[in-house]
Amino acid sequence: EVQLVESGGGLVQPGGSLRLSCAASGFTFTTYAMNWVRQAPGKGLEWVSYISDTGTTIYQADSVKGRFTISRDNAKNSLYLHMNSLRDEDTAVYYCVRHRGGTWDDVFDIWGQGTMVTVSS
Amino acid sequence: DIVMTQSPDSLALSLGERATINCKSSQTVLYSFSNKNYLAWYQQKPGQPPKLLIYWASTRESGVPDRFSGSGSGTDFTLTITSLQAEDVAVYYCQQYYNTPLTFGGGTKVEIK
Image 1 (cartoon, rainbow over the protein chains, first blue to last red):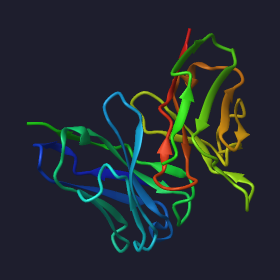
Image 2: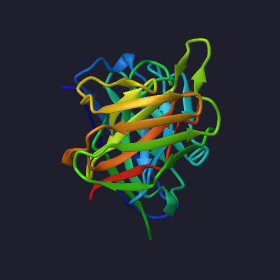
Image 3: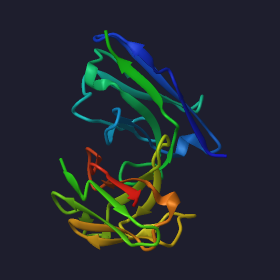
């Protein structure tokens, strides 16, 4: 079964850091580009960051540029999101999402269940 | 950035009725070289992650019931549910993958009247 399982969410103070992880299984992780997409409570979807299948190409939303870093370990079938200088507005469910293919110009075909990040003092 | 605007924000219909959701992009998402519209639709049921319904504006994902259909080209798109079922209660999002940043519409909430 194709599966994405996120972990690492929790409560963090403004200005703090957190690292999210996503464990992929049931497919050849090395041939798919991956993303993080977030959803603030009661709000819509916001794409956060993209990483190509090889990890050589990365794109980010302006809202997180300079603060968040996406990475992957293909040997461990894992995707990560390192989040620094967290703000109240980063509070959201963070979804690990697979691109159908190896590049960014394709759809999101598999979504994890999400992990909640709450930024609050 | 390509801004995706959905309408209406919500709609309430009776079982069996036709639901029509509109999505407009601020610039074309039609790639002329391939003649493909880089537009997808997702369904998000309460408490669940989104699920891919439609891609290339009109191609149904495997396993999606044929009461769901997508149409449109360029900047104007429509998701139609021909006969609304109770299990279709959800928020529907359009999304462009024509260029980065990848952007979503604000969502349309579909409820049963």
